[in-house]
Amino acid sequence: MCGICGLYNFETGAPADRGTVERMTRTIVHRGPDDEGIHVDGSLALGFRRLAIIDLSPAGHQPMSDPHGTVWVTFNGEIYNFMDVRRELEAHGHVFRSQCDTEVIVHGYKQWGDAVLDRLNGMFGLAIWDTKTRRLMLARDPMGIKPLYYSIHDGTVYWGSEIRAVRAAVPVQPSPDVEAMALFLRYRYTPAPRTMFAGIRKLAAGEKLVVRDSRAEVLRYYQYEPVPFAPQPRVDEAAEQLLDLYKDAVRRQLMSDVPLGLLLSGGMDSGLLLGLMNLHGKAWPTFTVGYGASFRDDELSDAAETARLLGAEHHVVRISQDSFEEALPRIVGALEEPVASSSIVPMYFVCQRAREVVKVALIGQGPDELFGGYTRHLGVHYGAAWRSLPRWMQAGSAALAGALLPRNDTVKRGLYSLNESDQLRRFQRVFSLTADAEMESLFLGGAGVEGSHSEAYRSWASCVPAMRNLDELNAFQLLELRSSLPDELLMYGDKLSMAHALEARVPYLDRPVVEHVQRLGASFKVRNGVRKWLHRRVARKFLPREIVGRKKRGFAVNVVDDWFRKSLHGRFNDYLADGQSLIYRHVRHATVTQWMKEHAAGQKDHHKILFSLVVLEQWLRNQTDAA
Image 1 (tube, rainbow, N blue to C red):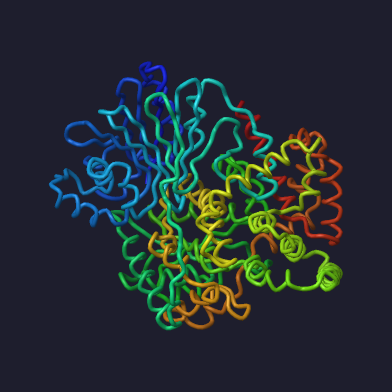
Image 2 (cartoon, helix red, strand yellow):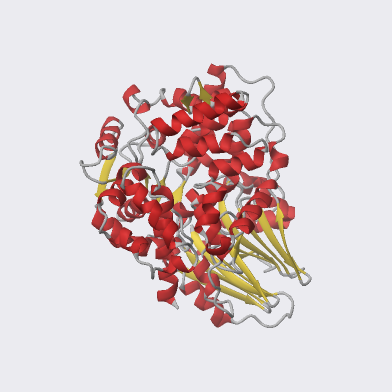
């Protein structure tokens, strides 16, 4: 795990400035405190910061080249199958000088060209420089675990693992992108290729940027189109296959030459990881964050019990409303792009605590997207039955739900979404925090609203060919795996762990696991209203029934919402009540004030959009302070 950056004057051929790349690398020291490397080759310069995990010797130094200096690589991430790839390359006559996974990318490119990307099972953001053809390739891993940003100005491409590296080099500082703000407020994150900075883009999961012969082109290299198993496996067979895949993924991702642990919640997913880790050792360090007994969804006791049952060496960190509010500017700064998941705060603090003990931590992200763990998955799965009802029954049911559950934002959004006949627009509505009319009433002059709506649709439309063989739930989950998971959850997982020089690994998103699960029918994921059905069956082999049956925790509902509704004179409220706040250059103060009143009175549940506005305001303030 590291940080990469660089620049290439691909149109003019002007010499690359070493001082600029040095400035870029200084912005990402937190990602790689162990070593620095720079390589300049005429019009190109590569920069690198190292967090040493595998082969701690100087042999792992980057940028790394082949013995003849014809191929150079900078690489952020881990290749979990690198020994298998290495043996294959050695059979072709390649000779290795290190025990580092980076070297298989160097030799793999020489052997297979860009097709080396299809042979890698891991997480990566990388740059490959071919000196013979003067060709640059940047690539992001198929699951999007590692972000990679770039900007093109006047024939020069700048790139980095973080936006701050790009901003350190571009000739003109980018302004906030209004259409990206609209995307963020609609979805709580900014889908690729946009970022919140005008002119700075990010590669989507499974994409590469190729720069050669005065041209720069973004291409999708990961072309996997899942085809359902025919016939579908029997239940016992499916559970055994999935368990074997989980075992293999955890075994691979435990490779490390430094201390390794687990971020442990009180739930099933991280508990299962701990059970699988115990096949390879005992007394693993585990880390949990909590908020105090006053919140009914505090996870400290559940996680402590899981750790006790499975013999872990457990560590805890507690945060309060004061620490939440005090840390928010720092956390938004670490993210670079606003993400309005309330989990960003506990994630920041638990990573900080973990880094005091270990250098690598496994995390349990993935099963909710793979197996339908969210409430929205129930609506998507059973939506066809709803759409088959007569209009009068739909209208009556919607009115009844609104009367009985006036504050249930999830139900209202679900009913709004399910009536849409176009599948992709239906999915777009499921993701959206607000209806189109509400978004238009929020932005001054409707600025950026329609453009953002259309751009997201166009971007997600590229996923449609891969959906053609899938049922409704699997099609929706494919979109999650290619957009919301990499650009929201995995993005903040990367930024908030690397803010503390902690490498976070996600075994459930091991490529063979993901590609296998995408071929399973919806009944293995949601069955009789039970979410993550097959995943639960596997978990029962390793975990006591009380752990598997624990209710999913909800930090946003029981902490953030409580602070918004009861602490009406706190810092968050001040952000929204002050008419001089920076967000009101773009959105209507009157609309936000109305939402605040409805939320405080318990009439409607606006906590998600209100928290999004708070995060956006903090992001705008950060940009003003940095100017």
